[in-house]
Image (tube, rainbow, N blue to C red; front, side, top):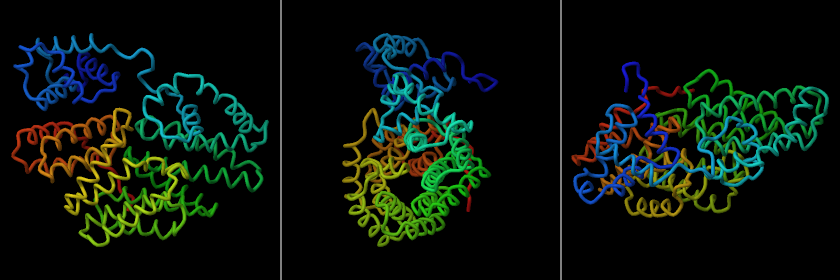
Length: 441
């Protein structure tokens, strides 16, 4: 790192080339090993030490010496940057959100990149023009215009797992402003209700993004908007979801989180199985932290049946709860309760759903929880590998929940005498973001 805190060009180049290939630092370390000739390979340190060097190189702390410089050259030559798809998601997030939302399917990063590069985004111009005319007062909003906004809202919730909050938030605010402008015009009751639901669903995500960025004032403002929309439309799912998000915003206050989750469960009742399944799993997670073994186990066992009958695409915010993420919430509970056999079973389930296309934000939490469970199962090497994957993802997304889970991982690994654990703790201390998230409580 230079004296003014800016990474040198060579450090930026290494990081950019790795990210353009969608590699973790662990994968780059493996590629460096593969690129080495037998004699050089015999002199290389352990994989964890190579990862540490990569982290130092990308931070600009250490410039690669002759051996690493040659290995990087070979890796970049053998693995050219992809040319068939863009390497960055474009800035027209509103058009992309509409495209993704219209599909209403799980999309991995590669799919998002392909969608951004095709005419699918261009197709958003037609309904967007109708929206512009409606906002200008030259065209009364019709069902097609409102459906455009509904699709876009759903898309923002899906893009949230791929794009950092600070990048997506401005487009989401523009989207909310458009919805608000239309709500101020004279509309039939059915259209007005649909738009109010869109406002509530969007405000939930806006509150989440504001919290991620440490903006307590805007977090509170968006939370109020979501709750007003829920009351106005009598949509209890919006209210329950906002309450569920607030349970994360309570930070390490598990008692307060549990009260909020119970409030959300009371709001949702027996309706909306997907939201109910998520809240029950959250109840089990926080109950396990409070030492409520019976309550946590009852909740996580109940949620299995609820989840089996749930449609995770029913509401925009439940799209994240795919089988892999659901299994990770079960793992959190079993790991916190030290139920090792159940933890191992949950990790086997997670492994079935993780791969190179897994959403980055999902990896922040899932890999951190796997690291904790693996450490408690006495597999320190695997725990450190998972922790490093979580650190890569959390650094890329600057996701507060990821940092919170990694704090727990680092605290447990600090107690280990293993060299790889000590190395990770040193790396983590050097990387950890210092900013703390605000609490609304």
